[in-house]
Length: 204
Image (cartoon, rainbow, N blue to C red):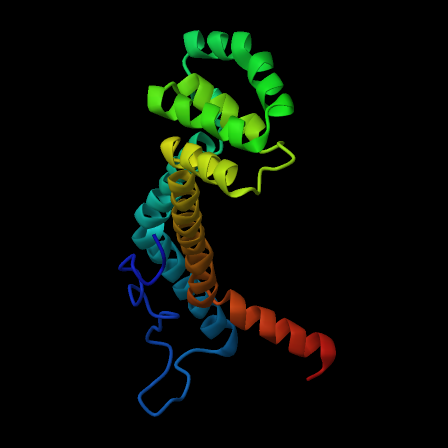
């Protein structure tokens, strides 16, 4: 959720005004009382702004938490997505697959990978994808095509696209609290006080 899409834009003016001046612009109260009343108005404005935006900020925070969980799941290695039984089988076959990758020429390894794909053996597919990238001739066309087919079968490229989509959603969701905070500083007079303080400090 971003600021523009949240429905919050324009939910509150930059600051609230009150009956502090007459129609001709002259002050109703003494300078001290004027300042006190203006401060009270800004406090109320900030409180009302917080009440109006709290639901959206909390929703954004929940969305960020959910997206982070989804990201963590996508960041897992394919080996980590296997069931306990399949991981045990992978551990038993790991050295055999490594040996294939080390000793087989590119064409023969490509044939072995294609046979694994035809058998729809997820455990071996995960292992050949993991270790096949280390083959010295992995850029040769037959082996490259077989490795690409492994990635497609394991939906690794889809996971990459999903990761990019989640990253974009995370950026948008994280931007909302920052935008709310920025507007809040305008509502409660923080920005004006900061500028006034800088002017006093540097005699501007």
